Image 1 (cartoon, rainbow, N blue to C red):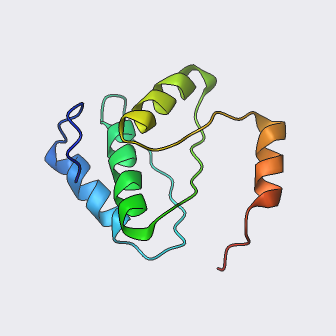
Image 2 (cartoon, helix red, strand yellow):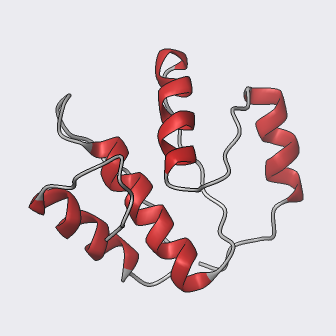
Length: 102
């Protein structure tokens, strides 16, 4: 799914990434798995694949504050721009986003 030298994906991560990347958009997804499953890497690879095939994309990852820097770093390794926002900043971003069609 990616040629990124920082990560070697295992089959279940690749399958997850390919399933999500080929889904119809807009896509809303909640991913839950035990610690160590490789969710961050799989999602970063998926977002990179979607970005490569659809152009510029917007996404929201909600995570505990303790994991924000980790997510930000891994997304950056996949060449994805990201920013950490608090609730007030999120509301401003949300107000500026184009409406999604259901």
